[in-house]
Length: 111
Image (cartoon, rainbow, N blue to C red; front, top):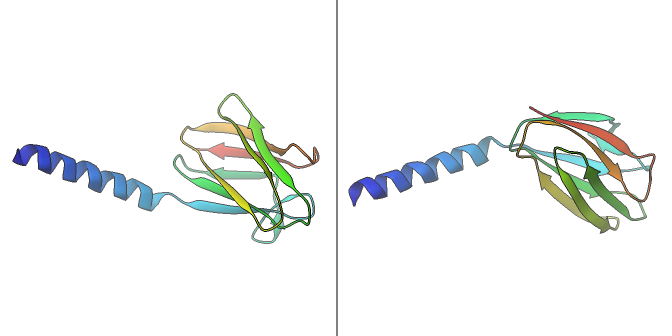
């Protein structure tokens, strides 16, 4: 019984350690562009386990999605002030776009 409890404790500690190391990137949609720290970006590199929180700062809806082989997702349409997040669990690269504004495009690389 003690081995089972010790094993469960070690597993819990490992899971907490991994989640503490993950980074959440904040990418805004502003001026029909992807923006990080006030700068328009066309690419972003992050680590496996990291996430991106997309924040809509425009006065109209955005719909962030990817049809890439690595990860297919659709965060749905969301208005100004709302945000949606996604966590990246596999290494590789993908295209991220806005379904409403086709000029919005970003390459995400996960290492």
